[in-house]
Length: 479
Image 1: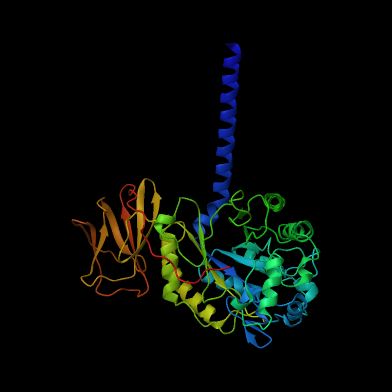
Image 2 (image 1 turned 60 degrees about the vertical axis):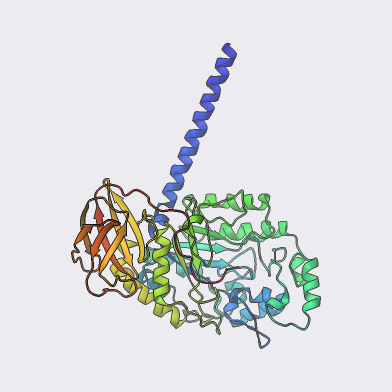
């Protein structure tokens, strides 16, 4: 009997220890995620050698997104590496980049330190295929960006293609048929070769094993990124093609260099889930959300890396409403820019960011530090909320101004202490209706894109959402 009791006591102690450890880990993660959950809006930057060809190879326009041109065009390593001789971003101004992001209302930046073409924007001792050793510019691009982020109080994150690498031998390559890029006369031969060689199209890509690539390039470069640039807020892994748990663990171990860092879910599924999920080019529906942190990454036009023929720009209205839709579901919006090879942003991107910034300057309170809407689907717009001292603030972003000037907030029956236009502070009258709260609006919408009404409510508003609610976002699926 004593043995049984002792065993039970030991078992309870172990349960308590595991529970305490789990709780401590949860608190630690919540602490690391705190700034990210408050930020809601960030800038993605896809920049690299692919900005030089800008969508063309040997006079041929290559289909699909710009940063995949080497894969889509099946460009040999030697030919692709020759583009680096023309990558000379003399107009690069990291200070101006970060200042623009901050003025647009963005709280963090994630830049492609190394994309699938294997080119590092930083000085690396693990591979000569980097900005300092392979280009006439000859300077590390990440150091001035890190300095500017510290200056303006913007968090800095690094995107790193840890598995796919088309120029450092041993790196993985996702198979794509040649005709998806262009009508190459050698398509049949190349496609047969890629099928037999795990997606590779150049024998020079397979002179080493993936294990060698992980040990000799990926792990050392991630260590460089987490050592040489001060605080790194995010490590954004991408496409775990060919990854194993063993490889992933080696990369995951490097994160100890930055104890406060957060990571996404793309290191290796399912055993390395990271801190947040990453839907691409779309905004999840309510039915898809599972309570986990998430971030939608999305392009401003149709491509991530600069492509000179891509003029399919989203409107400022679409960008702002996407941001509101995402925030209303408790997510973050990582909006992309693809700089040109000379180091400048496309004019269309700058124009839109300035317009978004003007809206955010007035209405940012409805985005930052907010939580998902507690309301059911709203036909006229979106809602975010804040809870403080047992009460609730609802931010109602109105897209469609009611013709009768009566805004119905369905299901809201709790006492309202005030309702004001966020932009001006103008008080609005409210009344209880059969369907919920009714707010009397001005004759015309003060903001045609989204007018925000701040409603202060007594008590905590119960969650009235139901599955299937919400609109999907715009754009194509990113690779």
